Image 1 (tube, one colour):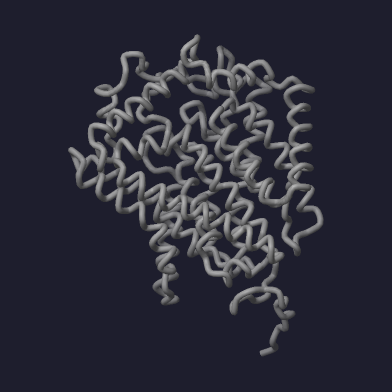
Image 2: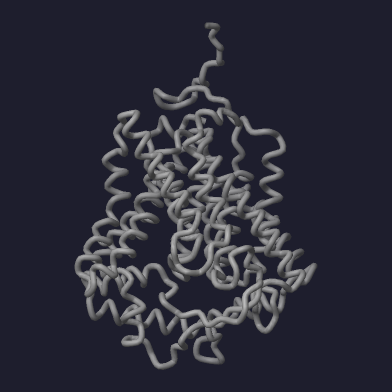
Length: 452
């Protein structure tokens, strides 16, 4: 049989397994990534509001099963000791909050959901990604999803077919609808950050068109992100962009900030896209005592209720899925019964407020100090490891710096956004994918990361 000769790997590649691979091909060997790509793309499919698992959750389950099958077939050690400790640490809080809940059976669905999003899916991502090309495929899927949802959101704003906002059906929500008001903003932010990372440090073997295309997409996605009117997402995206720019170097950071500033002036000032509403929306964050925004006052009331639950049971919390049952007994009288949603093809509906819209306070109230410490310890280790490896990669001229930038940006965004949001809705599973991408960069061996 005739052998096919391939050029040797570059001498700068680190690790014994750093071999040459087709930079933008080799799909036959990358079929295990298909469930991950499906997990990224499927949240946009409508599946009702019953609270059951959607198509993306099914795809994530398939990804976990594929991962288990490959481990059994290839007989490889699943994770390093460090990675197993970091990714498995949150299980301590989840299990304790379940067994100590007033009704452990009612807490079991919460245990399954938390294990899926914060343990199983991140581990599956870490194990199914074989090299930097696999990372780029999954990150590219985030960009594709963001573009589709962003175009849909802008169309909703222009045609007045979006979700209801200040009496007008102009809020961009994509295909997620008004019942998941943060869905489109979340996926657009993911795609914006992934595209920006590629534009800042384009892979060496990439086609010439990739860098300008990534830069244009990153700037263009600012428009639907702005039209989502999601304050927490704005703050998280700005924080992630600033962190990544600080890690790319002073000159490139200044240039990029100038481009972003010009884009903001053109979008809001030049075209006048929602300028008054955007300014009012941003200012409403601080209006708590004087004519506060109803959503802001409700959010702070739920934060106060979460704190009261924790003070009542500081060690293990009230149990997973326990916040709704304990809310009324700890909330102030000023908390409304729900929020009004309408538009984007949906009739007027009153949506109950069943969480504090702050992931850290949700964990603190339901899992106590033990659960919060375990979860924060895991995320802090991932973020610190990702930043450290990115700095090392930059200093050594690593070929996969774009992956490091995307990992740090996405992990930073998730950490900041959880100050204003928590899990829920079809995009929840994407949090697990993002954690997995960051964990792969932070915890994988140098041979797997350097194979670019």
